[in-house]
Length: 537
Image (cartoon, rainbow, N blue to C red; front, side, top):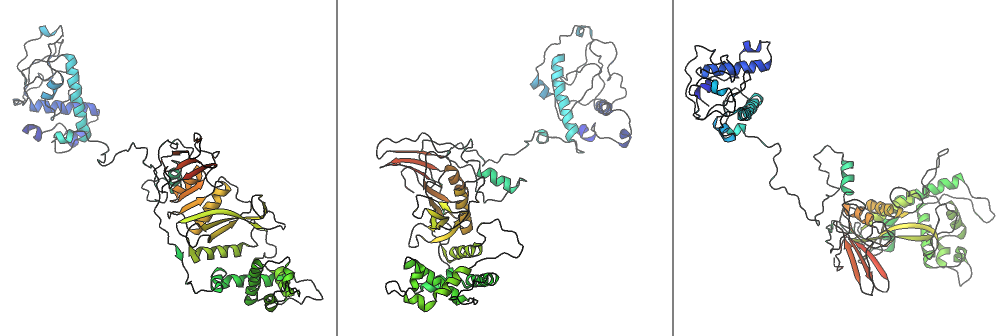
């Protein structure tokens, strides 16, 4: 920009200019014309095809125009049009856009000879002038949007700036083996999206049934989670500890006191019927209740046809320890009035079908969970506690030895010296209906209550629990899983096939889930998030 342009700019306005009531376009036109008149000498010129003098000829008394830095001609605009020129846009850039061409106007031959201008090149045609003029007008428009008081606009200021700067280290991976979801326990969110919705979206992004889930004929790449549990005893038990010490940690004094209190309340509310050989009810105590449970344990180890035979005078049945600890009539009284919970007068019946046993069941679960923590390998299975009394949720299972009884889900240690230890259990009451299958809900309830989720535990289950959906949920909670499967389960691969003994066929998913079919004496189907196709962990 010339020195004159630095001192005087068409956009340096005064307060009098702001008081002008004419439109803004007229004000811009007037400021540009004023700048041209002060910076350039008058040149005799007429509009193309017309006899009236140009705007430059009507100006008088202007100083001599200084020589321009450009050597190219300045394109003309249409008569009466608005001339807009940018101080930062030289005419050399116009020549790069459009080369000079001879004019095609028929009236150009009748015009008088034009005095030499700033450029020595020929004047471009009207179409070329429109192209260059649009370039100048866009430059002037950019000045209107971004001008400041300095009037110095260099190439850096006029260079377009990207709207978003891309991180050079960021790249999108096209590998199918990359897991494209994050852990659901990652709660560091920068967006305004609710956490619950974000977690739901992440969990189900690669879930079976979604477009991202598909089986491939490739070897599995397990995505095992490192084990972060703390197994072992959490109470001071040693090899010298007696069975009574272990029982005291399982059945604490607080639980015994609760049973004593509830039993005495029930006996007062419903006293036993008068009998010639039965004494009146006397309140029980902690020691007596412990003795009662001890006799029950002994009956489980020494089986007799009837519980009355334990107090029989027959030498073949008589148990001396039974008669020394408690009489048969007192044992009958405690069995009749043994109670674990009660309802206040007029209180509604709870919806929980286990409300009569709930306080003791919860206390036992808490003791099992805190005394000993299982190792990495755990298992969940159901068992049937024999019971032939009247009960709304009594279950019939012909595959079990008892056939009739209470179905109980148990989470136990799978390997090691503590194999078989039950960490927690849940009694099935028939109230587990919902969106999730009862088997899946039972497993998640046990693992969440026992504190086994999100710690890298390895769960082993049978075909009644195993499904791709269930294993995907376990993966989202950082839990490895292995189990036999049924081929008719939803989202299992349909093209697995084996013919001869020893044949193996497999499929894998991008989330590290392996479906394997192996033929031995019978066909065995397996799902695993731990193994590859060679069944090596």
